[in-house]
Length: 149
Image (cartoon, rainbow, N blue to C red; front, side, top):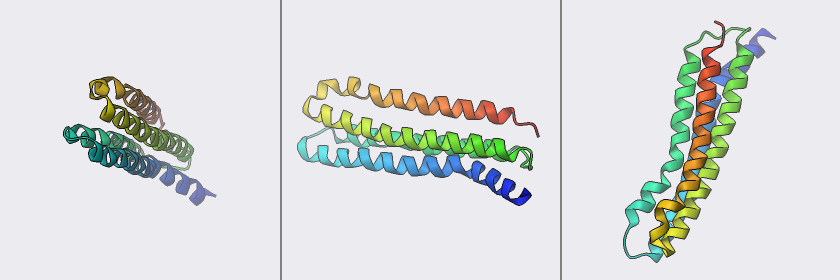
């Protein structure tokens, strides 16, 4: 039972990094495909589409930071459930926000290719989704800081 608890703790440590990276890959793929399609329809301004399509990569970075913070606290049988809960839930939040941010970016790219003057406004939904990623990140850091060693 003790080894099982420690295994769950280690899974919690690496979950934010792994799930954040998976979500970032999926989100960047979704937005990148929209950017490629938009480049076929417009004569110039490709850079803003490519730059915007990288926005969902931030969740992977946030997951790596959470992983390193969790690794800074000793893993014991008593702390393992906290590691698992924090890591898994933060990782799931990063996974889904990255995917949905990719969809929001794809929508922004599709809208602004036809009406370039709304580019700035069209990225607002993607920025709002990013805010939820940051909320999950901050909550994970606060909770990780309260794990009794």
